[in-house]
Image (cartoon, rainbow, N blue to C red; front, side, top):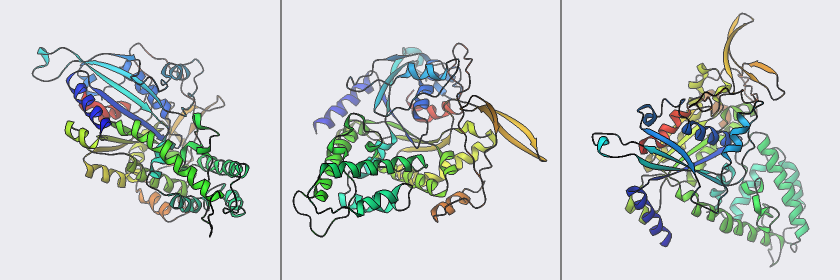
Length: 461
């Protein structure tokens, strides 16, 4: 009740004085979360490439500047370091962030409407909260018992890369024997390696997420547990009981505080996904991404906010944007098809959020454009290509294949458990950032970043 009153009182203060928008940013399966935030901040500070942001197009954004974030206990998002990486003479992608971080960007905005001339500019603070998607997936564990989680985890391991080794080790363990820390740590190492291999293969749901991004908890007992089937007898002090106890500690001391202290305070949310990478990894990885996106919404509380609603029920996520990244890896003629794939992937999640009163949307974008487009003739065919710099420094023109007009050609074989695409060959390639020649007042080049910002926060500007 105390937290609820504080939250509602803070909301009233923000509404009367300087509004604060808490924008959550997370990504699934190497989606480019760090690059998105870097480009977002750079293009709000220098808005020459943001014509679809209505407040900017109307000339109402007077200035933008960075301020110290309000939460002194969170690391600051290293915006300057990441921007220097992508704008260097030999540009490179910034290192991925592996923990929670925050950054406050403040905008001075002239009011709109008939009374605009009677009011001076107001300040709107945007608190960008950056957190790993792996942590978000853990929220599905909050209402799940150890035995239920064990059944799901073991079932997933049977069909995923690296799972056979862990299942063989787990089968040889007597879970009713007295707990031995060396055994628990050895099993945890094998299970963690299995999760890492699974993620590298393009799968999205690799929970518990802190096993792959432990931060300060690395090596602690709360991250030293594995799924084990319940034996016939579970005497006190046995291995199975200790695994159950540590799993419960993980839920209570790691997962729930993350939701309570951070995620439950989010106003607007963007979820980034590497859809092209999932397609390239095959039907199983693509279906795993679909299930992950459908399950993500259970972590949020979508709906409309209001003073009394916040007082009684806590804050709600009012808008959620699902974005397929790396649109610059496709010719623009393929972008509508990529957007259609993203819409199909999140259809179930969008219906739930819309029913709860939240606004949702799906689109394709590129946070920082790394390629240019060109058309070539090849074996009597006209191919729409993208050209960029590869990781080895060489220039290459690339045709990834045509995405189908009918999304069911991807969805159906994925749902049916196919191991490979029967009628398509979808490629993926990693490009370096393009060398940037930024003009004064311009941020890095992008694709539809301004439209994403308009959907997420445009109504509050």
